[in-house]
Image 1 (spheres, rainbow, N blue to C red):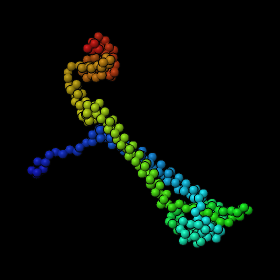
Image 2 (cartoon, rainbow, N blue to C red; image 1 turned 30 degrees about the vertical axis):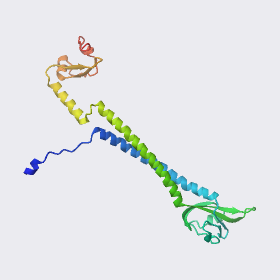
Image 3 (cartoon, rainbow, N blue to C red; image 1 turned 180 degrees about the vertical axis):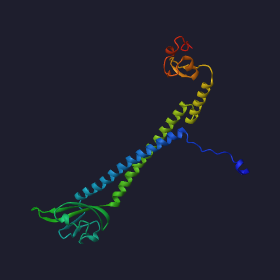
Length: 245
């Protein structure tokens, strides 16, 4: 070992305190629960938004065509009178007299489309109605909702950490601000001192029940094979005045 090595102080790994362990445990539990809850809520909200957009699209007419799929109306006046773009369903389902909800790229961008056939008084199909909601607009609404949910999650996390801090502080005060290793060492030291004494020692609580004793007390009382912790001192030593003391 070099001189420089001998001069270096002995470094020990810093252990995490009991209070930190409690705080981290509560923090991770809250994060896990919030992640699961927000994920589930977000999934169903996103699905419902796209489903609702498709259902609304069936009820609102902005683009109208006859059986030749020529536009009679459109948000962009330049597209009026032109033929509709083909979507993945190629309008075949609607032209066959059935409603449909699709998602495809149109003249205004990616949109959720609701299409329904138009019938005359004799129930002959004379055209179809196609209504679209831009996916970007739907996602704007979803994003605003997710921001509110995230805000509530942050508030819940802060309240959880505040509660964890109060709980860990209370626990630390209950154990006189000692760490578990310190308590274990103290108990071991006290046990060693108790067993090193050559006299028999028995301690009782306020109710007169035995709380601790050493091996010499067991030997003197002939209790080598019995565990008397929690038993009344009167049942072990009938004439004892320990309860009075």
